[in-house]
Length: 340
Image 1 (cartoon, rainbow, N blue to C red):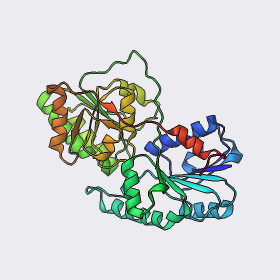
Image 2: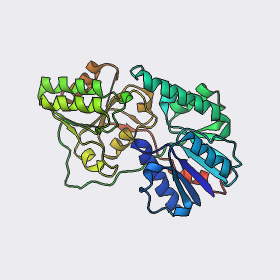
Image 3: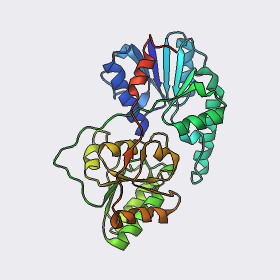
Image 4: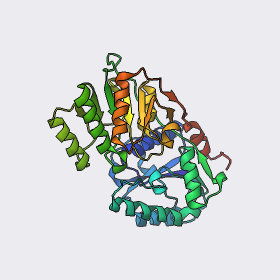
C-alpha cells in the first residue's frame, strides 16, 4: 500500500492538483491510503472510509500518525512540502511546490515573512526523512538544492496539471478582455496590476479585467470595489470551482500574470489550453511554462500598464507552450513494482 499525505492542502492551486492526483490514482487503481485535511472531509465521497483519514493540519497530529504507521506503507508521497516527522521504512517522495520557502519577495509583509522562514526551517529539520523530492520546474529544483545542500540526483522535475473541461462552444472571446486567475495573497501582486489597469482604462476607455478574489483577502477585495465604484470595468468572480473557470477563460482574449513568485502557475498552464495570448512577469517561472506574447517587470506598475497598451498598438506574437504534463511518470513511480 502507498500513502498520499496531503494534510496541508485545502485550497487554491494545491487543492486543484490534489483533486487531480486523487482522480488519477483512483482511475489507475493504486492501492492508496489518503491522509487529508479535516476541512476537506466532505470533498471526496468516492473514497472508502477505510482508505482515508481526515485530521487537522497539525504538526503534532501528523507526527503521531507517522509514529503509529511508519512501517505500514511501501511508498509515501508527501504532497505539501514537508517530509514525514520520523524516518519511515517506506520509500518517501516529497512534492515541494512552495517557492516562497526559497526566496521571499520584497513586498511580503513581516508576519508572513517570519512564518515562511519558520516553515523553511521546519523543512530543513525533516530533510533526511525523505528519499527524493519531486518539483514542478528546473528553477525550483535549483533553488531547493542550493537552499538545503541536496544532491542533484535526489531532486526530480515532474510537472503535472489537469485540463479544464471544454466550455460551451457558443462562448466567444471578447475583445480586450484580460483575465488573472489567482488568490489574493501578497505575492500575487494585485495592487500594481489594478493600478496599471486603471491607468490603461482611463487613457483608452477599452478593456475589462476579470479577477478571482474572495472576500477573505479584504485589502485586495476592497481595492477592487473602490475601482468598480469609479467605473473601472473589473469583474471579480470570486472563488469558483476549477471546472467553472472554463467559460471565463473562453470569454477572455488575454491572460495577464504579474505574480512575483510561483512554482508551476496553473493560470499560465490553463491559458495554453484556451489559446490565450499571455502577458506575464519577466521571471524564470514564466519561461518554464511558456514563451509569453509580452513580458514585463512585475515590480513596476508602469511596465504593466505598457504591457496592456501593447495589446492595442501591436500585433502580438502567439504564446508558445514549453511545459508538458508528466502525471504518467508520477503514477509509475508510485506503483509497488516501480524501481527506486
